[in-house]
Amino acid sequence: MAATYAFDRDAARRLIGSDPAAARLRVEMLERVLERAFVIPGINRPVGLDAIMGVLPIAGDALAGIVGLYLVWEARNLGMPKRTVARMLANVGFDTAVGAVPLVGDVFDFLFRSNSKNLRLIKRHLDKHHPGTSVIDAR
Image 1 (cartoon, rainbow, N blue to C red):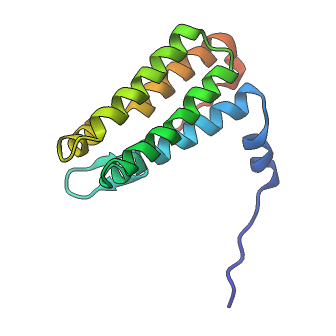
Image 2 (image 1 turned 45 degrees about the vertical axis):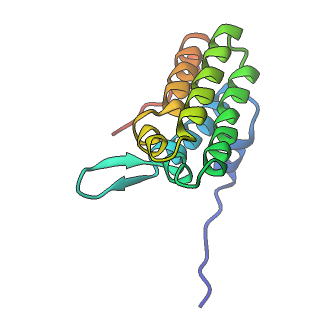
């Protein structure tokens, strides 16, 4: 028996759009996947694909860094100040460089969440310049 999946066209349109609200949804979703996709049982610590990819020496951290650059690209498209975009680039670069160090980098990826830091910068910009994009979270 084949599984059927409902496809929400409205949700897809909200994610694909070029408006700030769509960008907010995309960066929030990506940050969740990269930093908080799973919870480690026992310690109840969220971990995402960034830390998991970091287990692969050099290539995993490079790939995580490339994916993290997508948040910076979205920030640039939102018209964020160059100084803030540079700070975001520094966050990704620092995370990628230190994360590439064997063993120490794995612990660092677990603790330093560059994508979460960058998401906070984007949200601060959106809340100030595009207040209509804010979403009430019922958690």
